[in-house]
Each structure stands twice: as C-alpha cells, then as structure tokens.
Length: 59
Ligand code: FES
Image 1 (cartoon, helix red, strand yellow):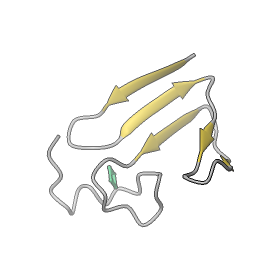
Image 2: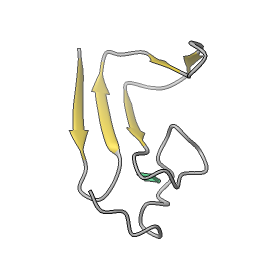
Image 3: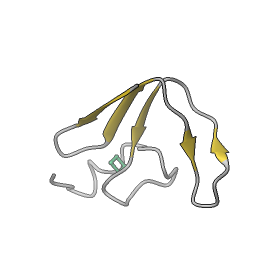
C-alpha cells in the first residue's frame, strides 16, 4: 500500500509498496520513496528535481 503526500508548493511524495510505470506501460525503476513532479518544470520527469523552486510553483 502506498502513501501519498502533497508537499506544499512542491512534489507528490509517494511512500510504501508500489510500482511506477511510464506512459507506455514500462516499469520505472524506483525505490520505496519517490518525489513526483507536479509543477511540470522538472528535467527528470516524472521525478522532482527541485526546479519547482525556481518556477515559483504554488500548490
Ligand atoms: S515539483 Fe519539483 S520540479 Fe516539479
């Protein structure tokens, strides 16, 4: 079971037992804690790379 946390003005934190797939259905290698971009500015999608800070993302 996975736990989702929306971090203020930042990514979605996903923790627990889960799998992640790309838009073509391929498994994405990840650990049991990931931070997923929700601002659209990451250069390493689907993962957050910290770019939300410079993008002044609010959410
Ligand atoms: S949420 Fe961090 S780079 Fe998009």
